[in-house]
Image 1: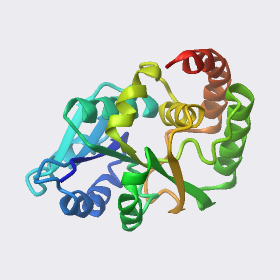
Image 2 (image 1 turned 180 degrees about the vertical axis):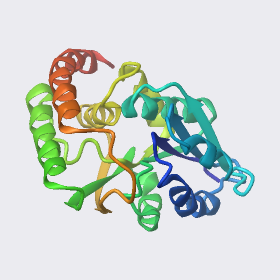
Image 3 (image 1 turned 135 degrees about the horizontal axis):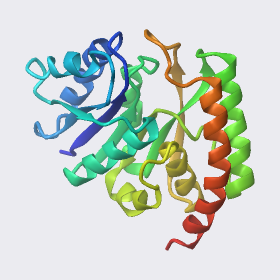
Length: 240
């Protein structure tokens, strides 16, 4: 049986983390890979009780593993999780977020077709998290087209299932500490014409707590991203 690692980064999610673990644990339990699959919560240096709350659930849930690390941002934490899963022999890696916006019930349709694709990724075609977020996603799509020459339907979706064998060959192209790791992975898969399937998913409003990303941060990240994208395009294009 395939070993599945579910990677969930968390920062200041004390209002959500227990519910998110309760919701996602049945998925890892069902696809347990002879009890070698893992639900990995990576606390990104939270200033609240996220780590303590998540850690306390490990006794109840034997396939749950909670990691605490210094704060480095969402993208860097996602990348940390991917490398951790690869180092521990995952066959498939799934990533979602800890804010409760995605639904575990929608995972099974991804798992059913996993053998046919290098990545199966959610398409947030009906988002409920605000107009500003929709604008950011549409703007990002345009910037990706300008910088990389590819069209990516929804580059930064936190609902993606990846073959570890494929990811292992390309993850080194994502710079350490990069803010938009999932975006670059989506771009790499598009530029290298790997097998990617988009499936519409539900994307609810944040279920509790406050979003750590605001418009000022988005603008700052966006400006830096344009510079980084142009540089990374050369690296990705020349990679064989």
